[in-house]
Image 1 (tube, rainbow, N blue to C red):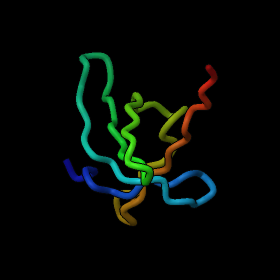
Image 2: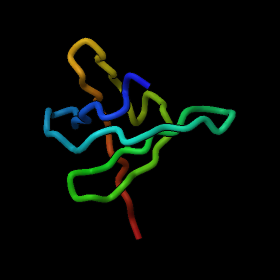
Image 3: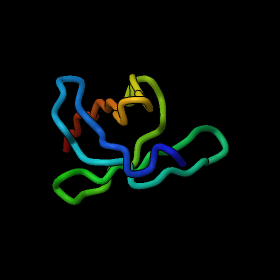
Length: 69
């Protein structure tokens, strides 16, 4: 609950948005991140997408997956 509304940054330090909410699907937590564009991205809370959460400095580092069509 402490993570809700925490700013989300890229590994390079660019602010991407904020953690809007999270849920538990029984296997893992799912983070819903509202991007600055207004879109919401839902990703599992795994190191591949969220390598760092710094509660003291209110910072979540997120690696956005690359999408192909």
